[in-house]
Image 1 (cartoon, helix red, strand yellow):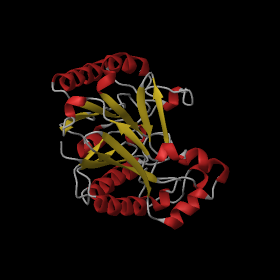
Image 2 (cartoon, helix red, strand yellow):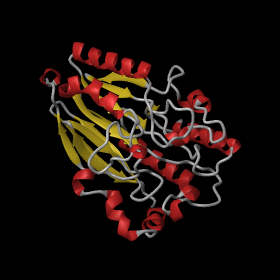
Image 3 (cartoon, helix red, strand yellow):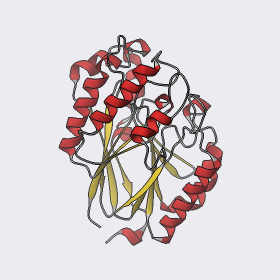
Image 4 (tube, helix red, strand yellow):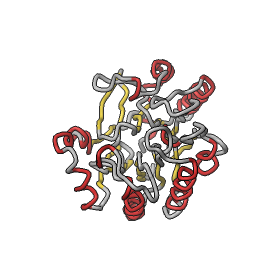
Length: 297
């Protein structure tokens, strides 16, 4: 195979013309456009084959007092900023990407959906990338939910991967399953037990699950499955993931958005909590060994 690289970022919480920062200033909505612009510069310098946005692109849903008009403006701004990327960008919806008044996902799908859907699958160098839409809910419920139809689609995609000798990376906004640290339903997809049930038979083909929602860096295994939780761009530590794919391994590095003054403002809000958000060194940089020998040249 030919080595390649991709990027993952999440929780940009874009809010153009915001008049306040949220979470006591930890989230930097007043600087959200500048953060997005700087991150795009860094992504283009990294020169990935593609980019995945892990959801909560904007500040819709029920937590930010965003009007329907502001929501549409934020979606439009995110779409225009995304067009500055030199690589394809795949988006998955987060709970704050739903209309703050109606709970609808329609405006999001018009701009960021793939064939009218929030889920997608594609293959790059014998790895199948499966993007799950965990917002099959009528409104922002914090937790996600994946329908029976989508679970059946996921299972078909995994079977294709097995048939073609591919490995698999998953992406979802909320955690696909709970961990010892994250037990609450607000952290995870509500029907996570069903997800575990369908993916367990394919464990040896699965490289890992990328997700966001928690606004922190954490890497853990649950029932043998690797979960890579990534910090939000909107608040400390303001990091995104660089992923280098080689025939025998995958190296993951975390990079802060290069706006030191904005980072410092978020960092100063609750210093005692910063280590919890940034995670341990092993939550920021680590290596995944390739599992499927058939993909190694």
